Image (cartoon, rainbow, N blue to C red; front, side, top):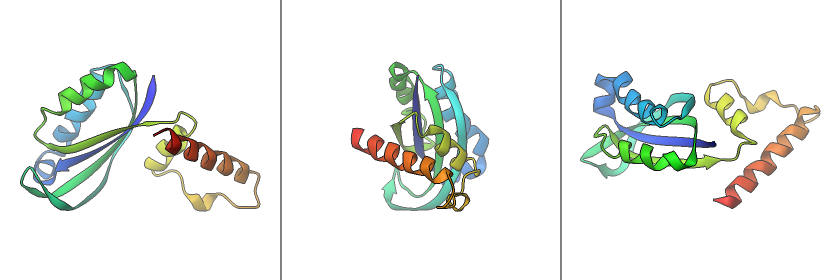
Amino acid sequence: MNYYEGLYILDSGRFARDPEGVVRQITDAITANGGEILVSRMWEERRLAYPIKKQRKGTYWLIYFKLDGSRLDDVRSRLQHADQILRYMHVRIDPRIIDVLVEHASGGYSSSRVDPGDDESAETDDLEEATVEADDEV
């Protein structure tokens, strides 16, 4: 099983009319293929840099999930048929940092909680090192 971050740009008009239904299409595509949703939340709504499918505004949705890598193509093919999803991107996440990312996305992590003089700062160094390694792999 691999950990993934999914970022989705949703049609803001359709999302405003039926937020649960639009997000359910994404989560159903993941869970139907044996995936497990770790956290799912709205990131922001903003004007797009250029129109996508004649839309000038998009709602950004963030999901962290666990899924067998061989099933990701099945998830992608299912998402391609959803008109409410303007664009999407999946990034494989290093398992050493997934807990921090999920906690942060859930609203539980704050960088101000780590005091540079504490023993926890060693954990922060490990996290930064893992992040650098994850970026190098991509």
